Length: 109
Image (cartoon, rainbow, N blue to C red; front, top):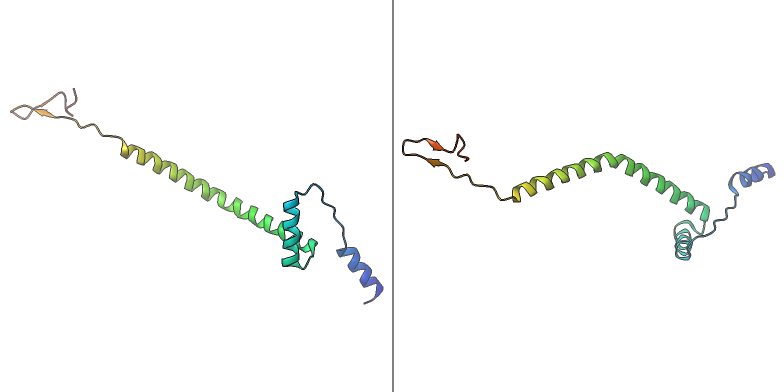
């Protein structure tokens, strides 16, 4: 490769990044993940993690309306179940011998 191509490549792809205040367990996990999945290429590992995070956020946004709809239906079902569990009042209808209902049309006093 010509010197210009090498310089252009290095200029485009050779960056340094310094990340501080990383919890030790997180840093150890990141290093191990980069080693196993990206042959110790921290840059590509970071890129993959960022892309995965973006995709996850997009999926969450797409599912948010559907999730709210499901939650609303669950709440409605909870109300309906609670109503079914309530003891129902039995109305006692009293009829006279000639068939009249005492206490009003629906039998209430």
